[in-house]
Image 1 (cartoon, rainbow, N blue to C red):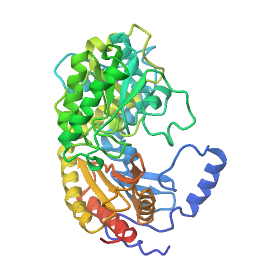
Image 2 (cartoon, rainbow, N blue to C red):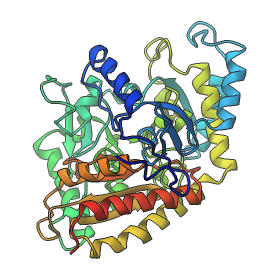
Image 3 (cartoon, rainbow, N blue to C red):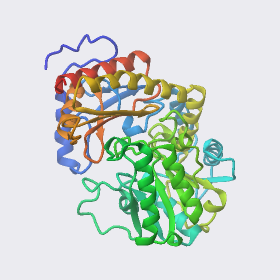
Image 4 (cartoon, rainbow, N blue to C red):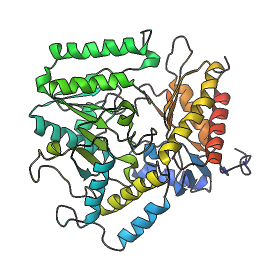
Length: 453
């Protein structure tokens, strides 16, 4: 590759092929020492991150539209978080909350109890990852209800530990040859209006809701179901957005039968959708909420927040973990919430989504391989197909577009059951200039790889 992007206008600067020479040396060490299982979106290595920009080991500068799979809503190295971490490192690192407690844990619990939906009394405790929060939410739901069955949804993703993997829908690469899985886990269908055979979203919703009632007769009676766990917007499943009517109907069904509703906000939380949490778009209050990813600007911490009487169901010692709610994660998370509120990042997410939708909706009439363009706030997706009539998923085209964009300095990644969706998780602190430049690169990559209608 030539150095044609050396003087690229704006923020991107590409000096080498991706991967560059220094990255190739590190890749060789990686292949020798790291198992092949962990995937990598782009074949290079970061040395610096700031806002929406990342610099790699060869001096190439990228605009980041992946945001560490949604972990960086407030951007790389937000100043308030960095300063708080330095202050915390100078005092203590980890006395372990189960040994000697510390105030940041309490302060963050108070904060999440305040900002999560619902005016009822709430409690919060902390863990290390989204999957670990899923596992504990299920434990708590079973303890509180005395029931065993748990319902998740087709195309849903809840993590890679065994209960979380059992609740996850996609077989490859997440579940293949890893069984047997946790018992008493079941799947309900989730609306996918773009791929629906019905004439209207309402008709699809009606059909699915009727199937849920049939499920109680054919599979598991509601009296044995502890919880339904739902991503308010499916993330790994392809940024699939349900109707408010569907989500509210599922919640009503739970209430009717004494089933707990668990909202998995790991990817949708902390401003991504233009609300602090995605369930707020659907005007419901979950019984339990799971949070991670952008909670602490990339530091490993997760949370389970919910009704106080439910969180108090486990007895002393029945939930927890050595590193859960580390002081570093807690002080970082407090600064993240402050950055979202003071920086008006919820409004920024809505602006990002509007700009994206207006720009890329027009491309559907130009390129027949663009099947659908959808967004909710700054959770944006483009679905690619073989052609508009068949809607056959086009994973190969998506991979080609992604690789093209990477070479041009834009970090993007795929999603979807068939891997045919490009998902954008742009840091909400991205500047207008950076966002427009990134969109230009993406549009150019699409035009280079797609055939015009």
